[in-house]
Image (cartoon, rainbow, N blue to C red; front, side, top):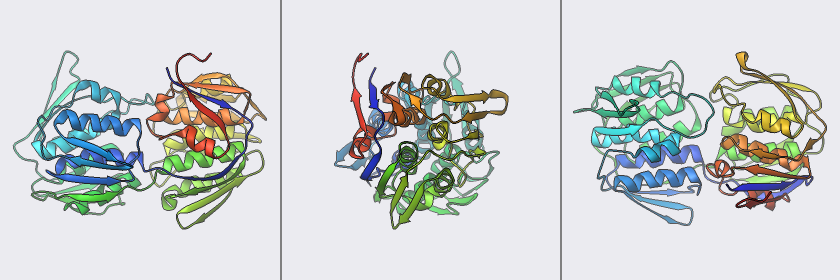
Length: 426
């Protein structure tokens, strides 16, 4: 099992560039299936989740090659509408091939997805919505965990989402792009990654109105065409490195920052005591004292505070000068890193019935051997290692590599004492 070793105590100083967006890249890679041709994706992050999506493409008969940070995908040929169970279980975002393959082939077989263990995250919204678009569904296998969907034609309709699910919104869009008629999504997700998917599809010839709002309308077209598209930078990676400065202290400039997409993170870190100065697509952040506590932080759908930043902020607040409260309103199992932080001396109490964490800041964390249970919790433990006394080992670093190109490289460039380690280093 790969690990990350961090020796705490160094402030962060310097400049780094933010990688391309993971959460934008994944649905767009699935969307390339809709075009019988070539797609060129620039600024694509080289992370495990992207590699998994490419593996699925290749299993379907497509071709994908890298040229630097540009991913060139040839989806002229799709040999099968079946996504292997192994591929789906490794990564939840593979469920986006549901809508894409339905749009292209009018048929798909796919297992229930895997990925980070941060909650149930059922795909009922996906299936219920697509079923309304003249799609039949059969559940196969001993455990009925293989979803087989088929139709003679996808028909546009009105879909009302009970919750603004990002994945469900994206799957509906993917299925509707080549449909007959008009599909209207009410209570659609407004996340930047949904807008990014719409922008990509629009450039490829789709007809979509209302991107970035709770009402999205898709008018089906006959076909898409080849496209070259540049992915935006990753807002969660940006927020993670901002949180690292808030915890460890220092003075850092981040380049290629999606400023408009991180306004909620900027507001929270400003109250925590950071000095933040955005300029163009760069951002300067500094902190020279213990963080301030945050009375009540609730995760919300965009434009609220992102659930993907909750774990990192918990680490920051664990050393704050006072008491803070976090309420996780998106995923019910996103406090798995609490016990790991407690090993490092954090004082945190979770009230499971309210999905609430009460955090009483301590002056100093201590080093420990901890485990990354999911992508963002792993990044949060790396941040904890930056401020802990001594040597911290974060096990299962592959979870972190799902979303960060090279967190050790980036933080090392800012002066952190951190490196990847393979095998048993204890």
